[in-house]
Image 1 (cartoon, helix red, strand yellow):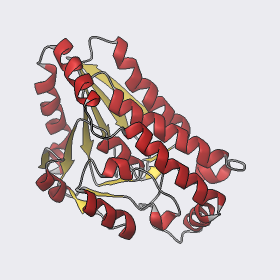
Image 2 (spheres, helix red, strand yellow):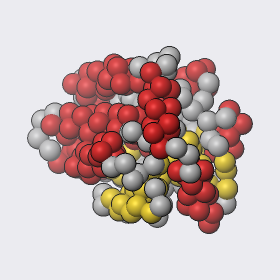
Image 3 (cartoon, helix red, strand yellow):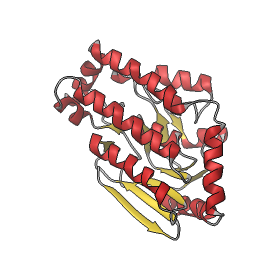
Image 4 (spheres, rainbow, N blue to C red):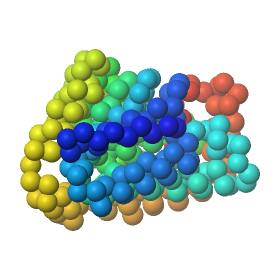
Length: 254
């Protein structure tokens, strides 16, 4: 997945761009983590906007790539790269604003759920299709977006939630027309960029320090079940079904 980075007046914009549905390859997921980690040593960056080009914020990992790798290498590397990318959003030295368009599934939930602020397009929907795909993961991040019992139902049923629903919960700051999504994200970022950068960096670090859930440990715990299901063959069965065209390409898993 090509990552396009630009920096303007304190705001770093990272755009994910991998048609048709912005599925995330292993190397590009690691690359996203590297970009985000790098802002720790770039004082000119005061805030980050994470967005996507084309259809969907993220449909999950690249299942074609996972199945092309030998043995368990695909699922292991997908797990490792997702862990690093989600961690890097959470630990980014400056606040991260996620601009979510169309659908935010699987890996997208991990990225958006660990962001500091979310703006979404009116038609955006959020979900974890993991159970239908023989995997688990990112319930840690889903529970940062919706109440716990709603998250349980969404995980068990694979039902998706709308941007408007998340706005009602307060996890999505603004819901706007798709044409205004990127500009709205930049407007929100500008508010943060105008503050004292040392204070904002300290504020983010302090908020992470008082977070009631250790998102790194929690997500790593989930990943153990993903790998266990993979050893049982459930993950391979679901991914092979996807490659045979028996599953919706919008419902990949991480």
